[in-house]
Length: 244
Length: 345
Image 1: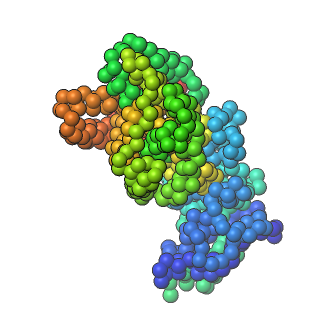
Image 2 (image 1 turned 90 degrees about the vertical axis):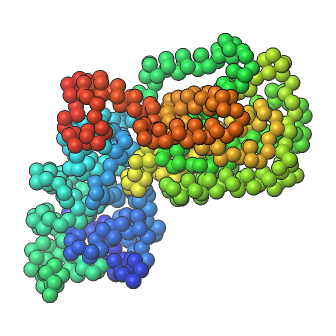
C-alpha cells in the first residue's frame, strides 16, 4: 500500500440532537479509487462537506498530503489539490463552458486585471472539453446544458486545478446509462494518469467494479473498510443495508 | 473573446464624443442642469453595477458613500480651511475616491460575509448609520442646519460647465473601469460568484478578495460623484446627502438597462433621469414622480425582468441564428439543437 493522501479521524457533526457524522475515521491512499458508501442518511455527504471545508466540524481531524488541515477552506484546499463535485451538478450557468473551465484555473492576484480567458488557458480548456466531448459547445452558456452534460462539465472543471484528490459526490445519479459509462471511463483514464478518487455512489455495480477499497458508513461512523469482495460479504454491512 | 471589439470601441467613442460636445450644442442652463444629474446617475448606476450587477450582491447602501464623498469635499473646503475654492475641489476628487475606497474595505469585509437579502439589509442599515453620523457629528457637519460650501467663482453664463465635465469625467472613469473589469479575470471571478458562490469557492476562486475589491471600486466612484454633487448644489444636509432615494434611483436604472452589462446602467439613467425631471416639471414639485418611478419598476419586473440590453441582445442573437423567439427556458431542454450552422465559425 502506498502513502495516505487523505486521513480522517474522529470526525463528528451534530445537528441539534442528531449526530449526522459520529466519530468517522478512514483514510484514502494515494493512487486508489476509494468508494464511500452507506445507507441513506449515513453521513456521506456531511462527511464530504466537512472534509472540503463547506461545513465546520464539531470535532475530529483531517489531514491532506501529510499535513493537518486546521481550518478547512474550500478555496485553499482546491489550491492545495483537493477538490470535489456536487450531487446536483453545479456549474456557472451564466458563463460559457470555456469560462467555466478557465475560472477554475488558480490565478495569482497580480493577473486580476488581465484578460479573462488568456490564449494559453483557452487552449487547455478546449483540450479538456474535447476529452469530454463538449468542445462544440465551448462558447455557449453552461445554463443551456442538459443535466448529464452539466455533470461532465463539473467534472472537467475541477480538473483545471490539477488536483491530486477528487471527491465525486454521486457522479452517476440521475444520468443516463451511456453517460454513466462515459463518466466511468473518465475516472479510469484519470486514475491511470495518477489521480486519486474518493467517490460517494449508490450504484453498487459501479462501485464494485470500479473502486477498491470500499468504505462503509452507518449512523455516521465507519463500520468497514476493505476490498469490494470482502465488504460485500461482511455481516455488519449487510445488516446496515438490509436492517435486522 | 477579445474585450475590445471594434463596434464596442466605436460606440463608446461616439457616445462619449457626443457627451463632451453636448453643453456647447445645448448651452441653456436648465438643459445642462438636467444633463449633470443624468451623468451623475449614469455614474452611480454604473458604479453600483460593478458590485451589484457583476457579483450579484445587491447593495442598498451606496448612498452612504455618496454622502461621505459629499461631506468630505464640503468639510475640506469649509472649516478645515484649505483656502480658496475655484477648481480645487475637482482636483481633490481622486483623493476622495481613494480614501472612500480604502475606508470601505473593512466595512465591505464585514458586510460581505452575509448574502442576498441580508446583505441588502446590512447595507441599508449602513446608510442610516452614516446619516445619523451626519446629524450628530455637529462640529464637522453642522448637523441638520446643513453645511454651505464656498460659492464657485465661475462665470454665470457657463456656470454649469465645470460641473458637467467633472461629472462626465467621473462617469467615464467608472464606465471604463466597468468595461475593463467585465473582460478581466476579476470579472470572471465576480460572475462566478453571482452564479454560485459556494461552487466558486470550491474551484479556487478567492471570493472574499474579489468581492471586497469590487465593493471598494464601486463605492470609490460613488464617493467621487457625491463630491462633485456637493460642490454643485453648494448646500448639503444629512437627509439630502445620504438619501435612500439616491440608491433606489441608481439601482432602478441598473435594473431597467440591464444589470451585469456594461451599457445597461447608462441606458437606464439616460431614460429615467430626463423622464423624472420632465415629470417633476409637469406634475409640479410634489413627489408624484415617485409614483412614476414605482410604475416603471413594476413594468420592468413584469416585461423586462433582465433589463433592456440583455433582452435586446438576446433577441438579436436569436434573429441572427435564425431561431424564432422562444422563452429562455425552452433553450435548456434542447442543448444539442442550439448550435445551428449559422453559429459555426
